[in-house]
Length: 452
Image (cartoon, rainbow, N blue to C red):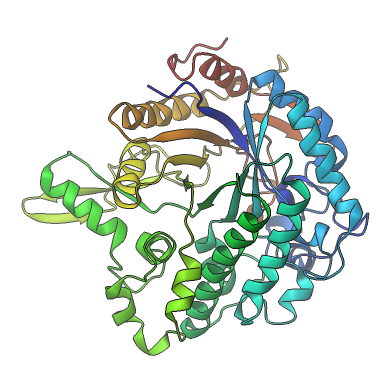
């Protein structure tokens, strides 16, 4: 079962819900710029208004309280606080987060703050962004500003969210902001600078706040043994942590430097001629001690022993999929946390898990998202199993609290447990919100599909 002080939360990110993109002194982010372009995002949609959370945060916190959340994962907008990325602080940006954090605390909702969730300051991108060797120091300055200002109210910090996505999708595949396709040598430089930025941010937070609880939230590339045999388990672990192909999505490449202070040897050999210069001091900075491991897990890939030949990514024909086209694989929330805990030995917090489905308000005024309820019940059940078998699981954050701007998909993909009519900004709690309320109330004991 889950521990008594378990964090039951939901998550969001600044650019996806806040709106208010060009008011009150906020600077531009790379997402503000690329969504203006009209080519990267579905239908030319932008996050300029999004869920208008900037003006409606009190209503949204009331929704969180109604659901029964005891924690909320949000992110700060770097250019809202530092319009140029460094230097002059925008007091109106801090004022907004003051009001939001205070409102959360008034409602006994613990804030978990992600310092960076992809909305990189445009002015810093013009200086080379993550390729600039000064970029880790820029990030450390930002981390120092926010941790010093909020140290009396924010105890839980997450430095960086899903670096694989904003580096690889944004700088290698060109699907996310800044929408550029750099060569692999540049990508490896950006990865190392992001890792250094993480480490320097941890140092900055700890210098301001000795009692801070600090984590990191990479996206988990999860493999699991289809039949649970010993051979399949060993192969699934190998797939999760070894740099077994020419891609850079592998877990070990992003996690080993943070927790072990070294890059995987097989990866260094593969990319030797492209690697930036890495010093022992760099690795010491990168591997600053952390308090928890934030796992973002949505789906996984089965590993199957087919007569002595190991097959991966082979799902049954007709396997259920979410609206993102992702396979529904509840086992990934058992095996993923289990493998990550066994390797890195840090308390696990699921910082994102959820699903997009095609929801709408039905003629009775309700949103009957039964697929999401079933999805969540299956996944949380697997997480509960992992916890009952000794994996130290400290919290679960459902993605997401609201339907929002889903990056290159615009407003076409609905992950929220609260429906948002984007033309009117009306909020409607979905059936999954009422179901999640029951789950929270029972501390995860009641995962039946009935709605409270």
